[in-house]
Amino acid sequence: MTTKNTIVERVADFLKRYPPFQFLAEESLLKIAGQVSVLYYEKNKSIFKEREKNHGMFYVVKDGAVRLYRTQDSEPKIVDICDEGDLFGLRPLITKEDYELSASANEESILYGIPIDLFLPIALEHRDVSNFLIASFASNVSDPYSLEESGKLFTEYSVERNSEIFDLQKARYSKNILTCTSDTTIKIAALKMEHRGVGSIVVTQDDRPLGIITNRDLRDKIATGKFPISDEVTSIMSAPVRCFQKDLSVAQAQLIMLKNDINHLCITEDGTPDSKLLGLLSEHDLVVSFANNPVVLLKEVKLAKRTKRLREVRLKVAQLLKKYLDQNLPLSQILNILNEINYAIAVRAIELALTKMETPPPCKFAWLALGSQGRKEQLLYTDQDNAIVFENVVEEDYERTQAYFINLARLVTRAMHKIGYAYCPADMMASNPRWCQSLSEWQKQFSVWILEPSPESQLLSAIFFDYSYVYGDTQLVTNLSDSILQKLDRNTNFYRVIAKDAIRSPSPLGFFRQFLVEESGDHKDFFDIKARGLMPLIDAARVLSLQHKLRNINNTAGRFERLAEVEDNNKEIYESCSYAFKALLKFRTRQGILHDDSGRFIELSTLSKAEKLKLKRCFKSIHDIQELLTLRYQLK
Image 1 (cartoon, rainbow, N blue to C red):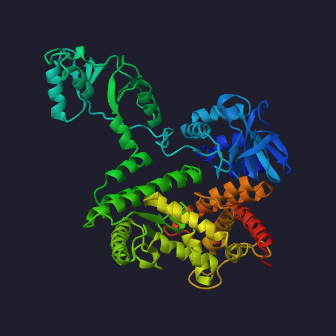
Image 2 (cartoon, rainbow, N blue to C red):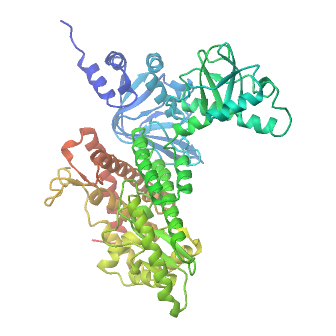
């Protein structure tokens, strides 16, 4: 009878819950688990330092959390916080080099050390594992807390770069290739291309590629008169052709084309021109592969002529969101990418609505996004919150001017509704005359909210103080912001009023560290992650940002990160709040996709122990920031 090693099995059971170990067979997992080093670190204990010789292993967080940081100007700058199941210290595995970052226990932690010599051969045998590790290492982490879940597939890069250059899916190529022999005339080759409706033809000999002719060759070499069309194709073909084997990835194909300034790749049996031609991969094929690429989607938005087309793009955005969550792209980047597209959709909806108006706008105006869209935190389908501010006009023209913009807003909000953004139940939309006003009227409105705070103004402050510019005249928005900041100096008690709002929902955990759930209603016994988790952080970030007069930072996580810079003594609290907010928002988004709803109410019984622990860890930040607000604004 074989005796089982329970410790090894427990390690294997833990590892298989997380990538890339989840891709491994049980035999490989047990082999790794049998060689794992179980390491204990007290809080703040160093694991490794920058430029320290590698330990011959990389690490997985079993319990606790680890902070990664680099030293800048003699000060530690946090790069990442690794949580349960996260990998770190991958540099020795991928490049066999020493560590570039420092790592230390953020709290009491248990780590698994995975021997590199044991793991590397196994990783190379499994494509999913090696792809995961390569893409992880290709990440370029630069901002504090930019990774909610480190050791995952992607990190910080801009929307412009986000053409998924590290996408490791296989490139799809055409097997139905148009070919001709070397003695074919250019005219015959061009006629074949026209008949087939393609932009290239491969010149072959014995099924091997000799060269390629494209539309560009015909334009540059024939249309200019450099060569007569009676010449043979060999006189203008590009040779030798670039070739590759059939299993190349989209990333590889894109890099080869960029490096060699070409638009086509020949796929051959052995990846050289000396073997049989199997297919042709064009730049167009890559674009098709990137159907849900943000750059492609942005182009689709700009070219859209109808609302229906924008709705199709919005549906693709939902697919993109799910894909990015599955790939564990950091939430900060998901927000950046998706909000660029969401804003582009809103802009295009406004542009299309303007074409339907009988006359151009009577004066300058600006369209504002409010609430979650204004904070650029809108991921799941939510309702619309928007407003219009227009240029001051003489009194006799005010009613007519306002009517024009209300009609415009109705067209826009109707289009947005068709695209997939529900009407606001409270009618906080630009089509409501109350939220479609001149600059001076808006200034008066904010003045009342600030100087004469009331229960209604507290409610509206949570929406209207998070506005951001979408379309129109930017100076109007700047003038409005200037006016608000000036008014805040005249009533500092306003901070205390809205700070009370930020602590109205207590810590999400009860006395015995149990989740506080809804006690009645349709969601009895469910946990409200929006009201108890996200809103306390959103409200706290808002009041503190207003106090410090932070401009052009509406995103909650971004506000906390900026606050960490201006209040060094509270840096740790603010950074932890930024991390907690992004983790909670990602969790809510995952739940919303899983259950096809808003993700707001969570059935706790469906969560794993690890998920509950992660949530509880985030709630400590809520308690800390509420304590800070209570002391600062003397709320008790």
